[in-house]
Length: 139
Ligand code: ZN
Ligand code: MN
Image 1 (tube, rainbow, N blue to C red):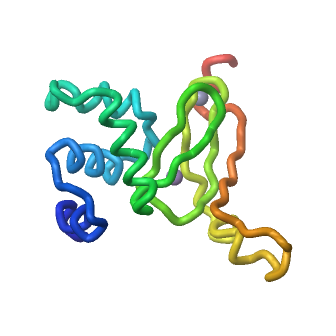
Image 2: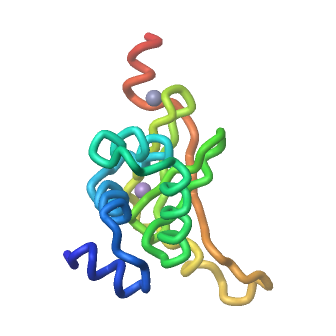
C-alpha cells in the first residue's frame, strides 16, 4: 500500500498529522465510522482537532475520491475508505454498518444498459434490517 502522505500529496492535499490520522483510521476500520466516532477515537491523541476539522477533512477526502460517504439515514453520514461501490447491511437496532461482499451487487452502474437518459454520479445499495447480535438479544 502506498504511503498515506504520498496519497494525500498526489491529491494536492496538504499533509497534516490530523489528515493522516483520519485517513489511516478509515483505511484500518471495517466499521464505517461517522465523523463523531472518528472524533471520539482520535481526540485523545489529537486533542487540538475539532469536529469541524474532521467534517472539512472528510469533505475534501470525498472530493478527491479517497472516501465515500454513506447516507444511511439518521443524523450522521458514515464514511468508507473503500471507494468502489459495494452493498452494505445496516442494523436499524444498533446502527452497525457492515459490508456485504457480493460482486454481482457491486458497481451496479456498470451493469446498467448504456442509455438510461440519466447521468449517474454515484450509487449506494443499502439493506436495512437486524444484525445477528441484536437478534440474539431480543430472543
Ligand atoms: Zn445490531
Ligand atoms: Mn463498506
